[in-house]
Length: 323
Image (cartoon, rainbow, N blue to C red):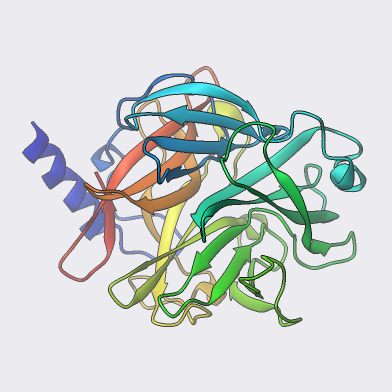
C-alpha cells in the first residue's frame, strides 16, 4: 500500500506541470493528509523540530496559538505565545487579539517568531518579531516591528517566512495579494531589517492577484519558493492550493517547472483540494530526520480548518511532490 501511495504521489508531482492555472494532475492523485491526532484545529501553521526533542507548532490565533508534539502525530495545546496581549499590535488589529501566520524557527540558541497583525482585506499591516529561550507560552519577548504596509501601499506586510542561506544571510519573504510576494534582508544580530531594499519575487494577475504565504526552502543548490494561490478562509468553499517554483538565488528570479517566472504569475501546483480535503495551503516546510516535511492547513467538509502534514519527495529533475 505504501509503495502504491508513493507511485501515485510521484505521478502527481510529474504531471503537475502547468503555470499558475489548472494542473494536469488529477485531483484524486493527491494524497490525503497524514494521520494526526489530538488538538488538530489550526490555521496558518508553522512547525519546527525542537533541539531538545519533539516539535513546536505555532498558528494563527489570539496571542498566537502554540501546540506541541513528541512524535509529529499527536498534538496538544500549549497555550499562547502572548497570553497577556500585544498592545504594540493593536493599531493594526483594531484592538483585536487575533494575530496571523506566525513563522517559528530555532537559531543561535533561541527561538525566533515572526508574525503579522492586520484585519481581513486591509493592507494596513505589520510584521513583528519576538524571541524566546524556551518557546513556551508567556516566555516570548517583544523585539520590535520589522516592516509595515499602509492603506495606500500596493503590497501587504503579512505572512512572514525567515530563510537563512548556506552562507549565513537572513532574508524575510512575505506578502499577500496586491502586488504579490516581497522580500527584505534581515540583520542576523537583531532580526530586524538590514536595509531599505524591497525585492519583488512573485506576482499574480488573475483571481484578484491571489498569491500569498511564501515559504522558501533550500535544497541542493536551489531555493524552492512554496506559496498559495487562490482563496483561503471560505471553509469548505476554499480554493487554496499549494504551488512551487525555484531559483539558484534567494532573491530570484524564480521559475516554475514550465519555465514561467513567478513575477509573471508562474507556479507549479503540487497540492490542491480533493475528496473531502478543501483548500490545502499556507505551507510550511522543514527538514526532519526521515524526510522534508510539508505542513499546511485545509478545511474539512464541515468547514473547520485542520492540520495537514505530508512528506515531500524529490523527482529526478529535483522538483518536489507530496506523498
